[in-house]
Length: 301
Ligand code: SF4
Ligand code: SF4
Image 1 (spheres, rainbow, N blue to C red):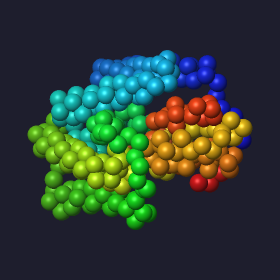
Image 2: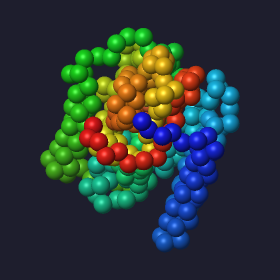
Image 3: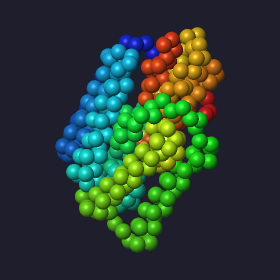
Image 4: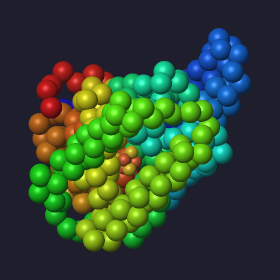
């Protein structure tokens, strides 16, 4: 059985994150002389800490507001400031282009920190707390979806999407000699067009499948990057089998269709790499059987 963290322990977490991000902000600013790092990491750390602080302090029914606040503060900043104002192509193709060009700007730092290396610690917290696509999808009415998830082949669409994005970049880069440029209008068009497509597809799928997160489950290419580090993520949901009555409320509320009690019964944390760390399961459990837990899992999953 997993040991869950105490409530006072959870309160420490937003302060820890706040300090961690500001330490990173100051270190990068001092070592590179670039004030952007100070502002960027300081702002993101403060936004997430405020969201988590709100989540902890609000009454049960209002707790998701904390997550939504962080989602809007970070997601909107990434999309509007880094994307539209600073003209960085934040789409996955932009990340590949900047990597090929050796341009380690905001988009590359964002992917490396939030979507690859940070996942080793914070799990897919990006998807639950900061994503600018999900910030809109989570506003749709199918929060608690009632249809069975689609069959396994549909889950492969995200890998196809990832492969097509990578292939498109390779063809443009090596076949047509396309070269990404700093703050170019082309990257701005790519960002706007790509996001418009994501939003249109995400909203259409949500209504079609009556599931706000259908786009996340079947189409988004980002989990392809996240799923390997998510296997080893230190932060996961843990449960106390003595308190769990196997009522299934957590699984019904989980936006990613994860069978949470099944992990508890095996004496494991929630090892699914689909978990977006939204904490809805903790919030809905009236027995207090679930909590955030910081540990290393020795099992394969
Ligand atoms: S799966 Fe994609 S769209 Fe969904 S939250 Fe994660 S990055 Fe955003
Ligand atoms: S397991 Fe819990 S934290 Fe993870 S996605 Fe499901 S409801 Fe959210």
